[in-house]
Amino acid sequence: MSLAEVDDWTLAARCRGMQDDLFPDGAGQKRARSICWGCPVRCECLAEALDNRIEWGVWGGMTERERRQLLRQHTDVSSWKAVLLPPRRP
Image (tube, rainbow, N blue to C red; front, side, top):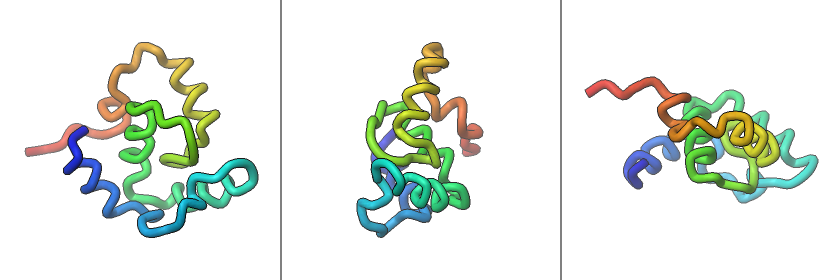
């Protein structure tokens, strides 16, 4: 994923401009996840975290534990972006 593509989806993220409390541990994860569920770029965010093996915080509505489990269950996936996002049209 190019830097321009990352910038594009992050501009539409519901968490944009919020403090680092969206990358919480423990009980704060429920609040962070609730912000993710209505986000228009939730899949882009989740793909970013999975493809880059980001090991902290809530990304795309999933905790680090949930993402680790998903990665362990699907070791054959080389691009989560390709799995989670529809192909872009020219």
